[in-house]
Amino acid sequence: MTFTPIPSGTTDWDVPLNAALTDLQSQITALSAATGFAATDHGLETWTHDPYPPQNSQIATNGTLYLVRLNVRRDVTVDAIHWVVTSNGATPTSTQNQVGLYSSAGTRLAVTNVDASISSSGSKATAIAAQALTAGTFVWAGFLFNAGTAPTLLRGSTFSTSPSVNLTAASGRAVVAGTGLTTLPASITPASNTFTNNVTFWAGLEAA
Image (tube, rainbow, N blue to C red; front, side, top):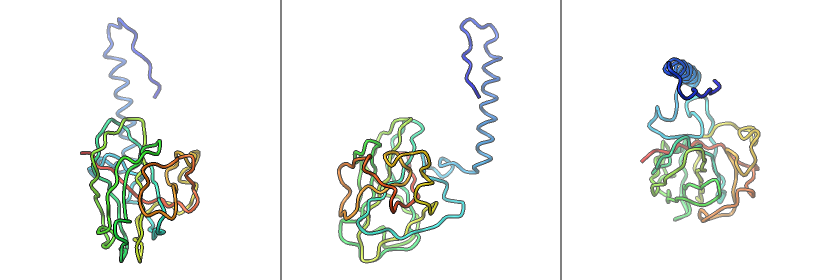
């Protein structure tokens, strides 16, 4: 649909307005039917991708900072990151298993220790300090693990670059932002992100 402004002074302004709204509703209905479920249907604000279709899982590599992108469609405050452990890890290195949130500029917005969370499988809802996000931006959920056996997480596509088609590593949907790490850095340089060995881990954000 192409937006056509209603000229000032239009007498029967309700006619073009209702026509535009009807068209918009039909597009929303068609999109809903095509995708089935949206993040909001699960009580989430946004997610990396729908977790229902056939998925894969992959064990994380110790010390690697994995980032997965989440688009922000409206002004909102979030206070939890959702993720899924499909096969638990074991013997976590104390304080070196963390989940956090980064801005598109690379600033760490929040970080939470998840040593206990990796030791069992299932859906995880990791509380973070409340973050006010702005519509039209994006953030990355960050995952970092160090353990005798790292956890295996739910993920999407197995390909390294196709999930980020036409995007650079600085704005990619799944990238690596460092290796050999023991904690989420206070900031990262998006231009230094890489698609090498990235994993499309699933993540979702919950509104406060």
